Length: 156
Image (cartoon, rainbow, N blue to C red; front, side, top):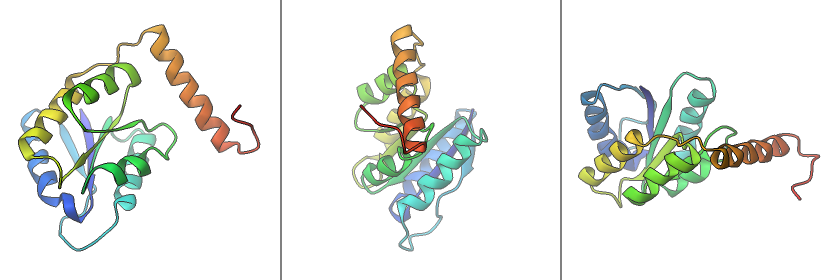
């Protein structure tokens, strides 16, 4: 699988660790994050990863900032991106099985490396269950994105 990974200044160390772990698992990693600790902004890297996903250049994305919140908020602004914040193993597994998430966000200041690895592994191993109910949900999300794109339409 081809995975884009992006990070702000707080996520450099965790990103480096996860790249090694992802490559050990046989994944190709595209590093779009910063590589130093100079202050920067999560939106820059969330935008880069979302763009690669929407262009079909990568299969999935991982984003790292201090808490994972800023990356999640920004990534979810993009049509076609369904980002989940890696709060716990159950949440990341369910997010993929029920909502076919394609971006995982992590908090470098709130998540130990070994836990981050478990979150990533659990998320990558989970599969979208593809039931009619779940597909219907994804279609509803796509309709919301389309309405947002065509701002003249109502949300009610």
